[in-house]
Image (cartoon, rainbow, N blue to C red; front, side, top):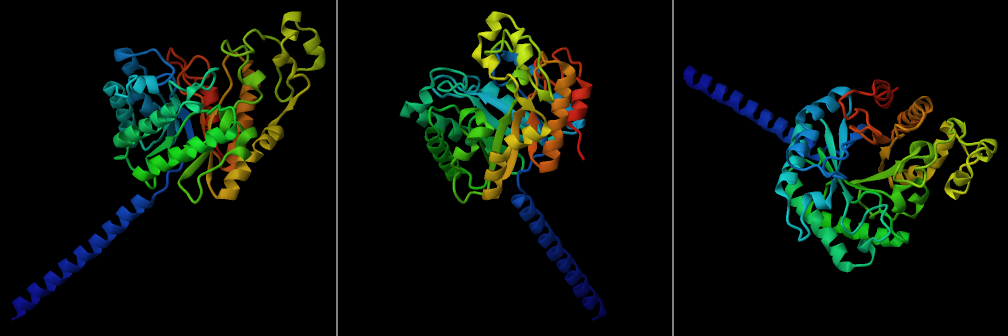
Length: 376
């Protein structure tokens, strides 16, 4: 009799432990499922699956698991991963499987290193942010193709947790009118929501995700899984100093920060050919400092506050051509503002001789890295 009682007691203890364990595991799974996609400090992985002619082994070796480990060891919590249509799909919409494998391998490396990933549709065949002709806005077939690309991406990426991967609909939309972009992005969100109800979707305003146009952004209603994103390269005369792909490519004159970026006296002493450039003259006597930068952010800050959404700066940076000392002061002001406002950010970018934290020869810009990763 005593033996039976002991056996029954042991069974009840075991059963109780199993119930407690199952409840605990159930709660853990629920907590994981409900975990939000949150980002604080990141960097862009440019010129790998976007804006690059590298293919095959050269592309594979440009960005590897070792780079992901390095990004994590620096102290970042996420990467923004630009991808281009022409890298990922052929003109008929068929996948380039090698590119998809690289993308998925990168996400797995990030998961192993506790990094989140924003997959950013950077350039479409029908839309480049600096192109004169953008068929995306005029051709319904191109818009349908855009939706189909995201459907295909979802097939590949929906297996990853919502807390790990977010989708950025399109980088720096540039439509002739704001409603063209608003209509397209709202349709695209609907397409994704039919497939993934809780995936975080990253959206920005028309015309290069600029702060000035954020009040015109029409955000999908009643959707809390939206991350609002702006880009910030102001003042452009400093951030893109002598950048060969811009209207400033020939300008190598004075530039200052903080204070007046270019004085009238300095402008008048420039060569006539440079003075004739109206895009240079418009910077004369314009004042920039930390307070001015913060004032420029008010539209996206208000939009995010009104909607109760997370705000993010997906790109910012100073080209390496610019005077290093004042560029670093600008970076310091930017990071202080991000820390003070709680806005997440990703610098442009990780590996580059133009804007990189790491140069193409592998050397690190240690002072810049220290500033970009500084926090209160």
